[in-house]
Length: 197
Picture 1 (cartoon, helix red, strand yellow):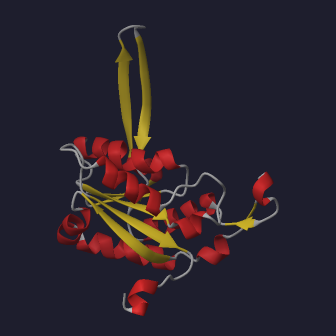
Picture 2 (cartoon, helix red, strand yellow):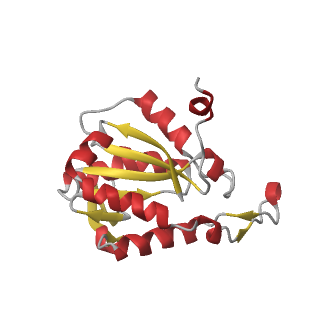
């Protein structure tokens, strides 16, 4: 896979470069090692693209997990915290867990090739929760560019949409520094830079 774009939320790029340069290097290496064309193995059953070969989010996530684990990152269940709350009105207690995709040296990573709500939730809620639990101080969110999302099942969100919403939302004092990385299966060039405009 190729890194196409970055969005620095709450100075995430600067914070991570200064405090987690080795981990950021590993994140970039993992992205470059994902052989996306091999993972275009899902045959669509959706009416609008019946029979079309698509990138498989589950296969992509498994490959990211494998590659991060090889580099010594905690992955999946190793990054799980228990949560509990009581509802006074009903007297019931709710228990469950929250799980981050990867953690190493206080940097959390989420790989999101799913529905839009999960992307914003990762940055605006989950990373904040893990920060408050003392497990991370910053995060990286790896998401597809629109060009890649167009070759996945419908409803997958993308970098351009997430960047727009985070810019429009603004930053809060409880937010933590996050670097959003937009990835694609092919290398894209900046046509405006190429043309000198």
